[in-house]
Length: 360
Image (cartoon, rainbow, N blue to C red):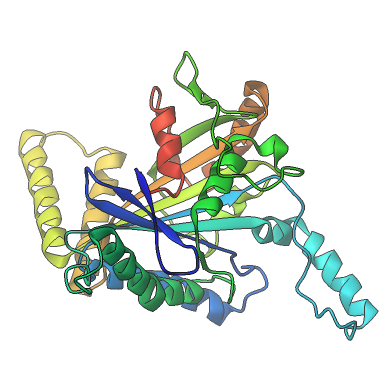
């Protein structure tokens, strides 16, 4: 993996020369969901749908990843004018509001969004100035994609205006260091270029977790999402609880042709199983699969974007005993929404790599 600079205010992208993939990583702060109007909540949900649709129609875009990372530390102060013009009662009420658990957790939350592209199909790479190297042309094309499409869409999806920032090398090094050594985040000086970002990463003998600098981490793959109506913003409940946690969504946009082929293949598989098992009553999972198939067909008929969607949840704790405590709390929270988690035994190192917004 290579780190390549761009002409955009110190921003960089990550380039995988073997797969010919380039990844731009953006950091942002999310608008508080509880304090948003109902119209704003509906608009944010629709904006994500629009973004995946636009990326599906953008040549070369292969993956959009969003990681909500809750790190230890105090919540930021409310945004109030510094000129002293705000009444004292307003400052006091705002401070109390910001201290509420249901408000504080998301405001302390940092989200990272990474966009990964196939450089051989990325629009603008082949038509840029001939004097630029390929790496430079890719950087310019990624900049156009970030500036014209991704960043404006993220604001519509709920990013706080002015908070979206294309990360540079120092930002990414600090991110990795913060995840691997959360105990030192409070008083650590900025990570220097000569300082290693990750000095220790060892998978446990049972393959259930990885040990980093000052924490233990375990990742689960979300194999089933809610199969009944849930309130908008329900994932906030998972992020609460006063623990270090990462919730990752990965969307791989699918063209209409690929979506239709995938639906045909799934329908063929269902029909084949019906032929072999027509004397047996369908199981719960089989009935659920059929409902999802019918729903996807209806969405495709309505010209909704289709994606290959994956989700991961990662817990971090000072030791394995505390990790077990956090896991029990997590199980209770996800159980309310009928999420099903797979423990990824023996794949914890790879899973942690997938959770980090590095295009891997």
